[in-house]
Structures are given as C-alpha cells and as structure tokens.
Image: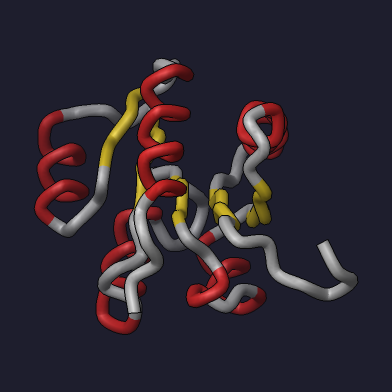
Length: 130
C-alpha cells in the first residue's frame, strides 16, 4: 500500500479493554484485515473519520459513552456503516437494542471466532455503498 494510502477494507475496533483490542486486532490481522483501534467511543469520535471504515466492531459497555450510544450517534450521519457488537453484556435487551438500531450482528464474549470472521468476510465481498 502506498504511503498514506487508506486500505481498501479498514475495520474500526472500539473497546476499552486493551488486551481484548490487541487480541482482536491480531485475530483480524491474521486473516488479512487492516484495523484501527480506539480505547473509547470518545476517542473514536475525536480521532476517526467514520467514512474511512468499512466496518466497526464495538464493545457495548465502556467507560464513558457506550458502544450502543456511539452506534446511535453514527447512524445519523453514516447509516450504511456496518456495525458488529462483541460484548460481555449479552442479554436480550442489549441484543434487541443493537439489532433494532441497525447492527449487523451481536456476539457474546467469549465469541465464536469463525462466525465473526465469516461475518466480516461477507462484508469484504460486498460492494461499497455510496
């Protein structure tokens, strides 16, 4: 990739658990996915350009703004940005709010790695909206 060029398929990972972020970044990287990680929803909003991403993977419960609130905020300006939640707060209420809000998938922790990779691979094969 040329210096300063954006990857064709960039995944944003937002989770306040650094060890989980690093593990997820390693897993996705082992399948050839480029990631950019953020430790909070606020960091993502301050530092990222949502249009640069083809997919977001968000934690639900974080210090500060929740992943669900970040997702709701982004839906207003980027309604076609696919979002996947991976959460230890995997209850029916959370799942319904995420999916009714337009999330592509919700995975409980510990998550099924093959299911996550299959979901992301399906997004990579999709044409870019716009």
